[in-house]
Length: 162
Image (tube, rainbow, N blue to C red):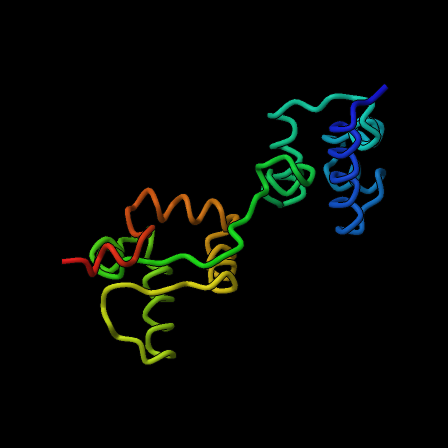
């Protein structure tokens, strides 16, 4: 008997497949037999365990991030709901190829808002989601990337303390 997690994972896999307008047979045909209809169906019913590597391959086939295949509540799909604050000096100093779109977006937001304090910039959840789309990753992955580059500010008041 499949576990609740296996059922939830299977339902998520089925949902993604159906969103793409594919039947189980369509998956087999589109993949040139790499993904057998019976195997994908058993994953979707939760009758068969899917390995992490096979899940990653399936995500690549569906052209979605692996996290999108995971059921709600797994913790991995958690998206940052609020805004973030960028340290503009660090962002503009460190904006190599990896952060060029964030820097360009931040400049555009500054221009739009007429906000040139030069120190920090709040990025709203919608802006963050748009940037994540540009980088083809989840918002939480983008936040992680920004944090690794040291451009996120956890307490903006600390920048202005004397």
